[in-house]
Image (tube, rainbow, N blue to C red):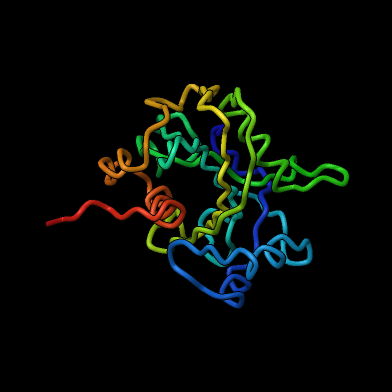
Length: 211
């Protein structure tokens, strides 16, 4: 994830469309209710990132890829800590289980799927996946409780690798590696909000009891 380019044109939908389709807070696995409309070119547009970052009238579409390996009955999930050189300063030093970023107009290709093009670009920029894998769309993330979340809508993909052979390319990905989901829960408060939502929504785990 490069430093923030306010002139970069990123893919957005009107927040009013999201509310029309069915507002939710947190995670929704009801892909079918949203995906056709939010990926329809008639409903999307490219806007300069500097204009939409502070504007909650638009939701920037963010593919959020969780790399994981199913070891027996236990999910092993790739997690890392964000350095201070990445573009979104509000996420610095937070732990994350998501790889991804904005869908840019540079991801447009003749006859290609722009979301998959963006996913491929982000994966290649941030990590090297030295394993075969399959990708599945598992849900959406919306979090209007934070300044970051109010202007973004996450499209969550699970990247299931055949072996946990993943290493970072991006120097700002630190303290990385695969850990079982139950181990990640122990570090709950260190994670960015979207990762907390994804851990609950995708893997069905709950934060540690406050008791």
